[in-house]
Image (cartoon, rainbow, N blue to C red; front, side, top):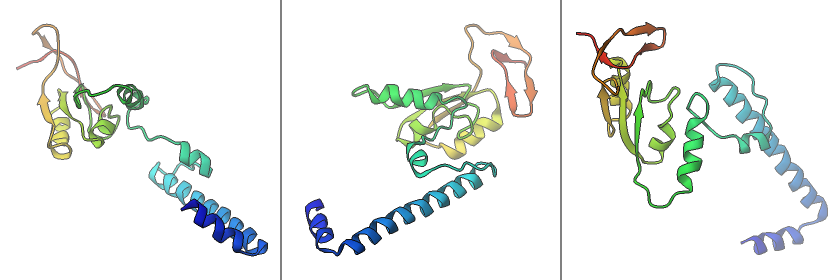
Amino acid sequence: MNKIRQRILDALPIRLRFALRYMKKLIANVLANVRSWLLTRLNSGVPQNLTREEIHAAQITFAQFGEDMAVLRWVDGLKMIPQIYVDVGCYHPIHWSNTLLLHKRGWKGVNVDLDKSRITEFEWLRPGDYNVLAAVSDSEREFKIFEYGLGSRASGKRKS
């Protein structure tokens, strides 16, 4: 295919070839600006001003500190592993999710959280997963649940 394309380009007058290269760069720059504008709108209105190369090199992460990207790099190097994850303290199926990228690749898993509203979101957005309303600890005990603006967080057994 490239040989045929090259023959066609070689048959064109030099001015037309130059114009085609210029148009290709112009279209690429316009598309980069459109992508950057869209990313700005998706990112709470914060301008990104990314070049075409920067957009191409960008990687999407949903985890708070890029943990999902580290996991993907690690599992990509492994052969024939079960595609199952366990996310204890899963928090949310999208925001700060360490497992969303794995889920998007077809993995299934177990999501554990103490907040009923969080588990309800997982049941809605990841119905194929096993979603558990629980706390995880090395022993059974009572504890206080502290709540803050993003939901509840604690570890141990919920007081009755």
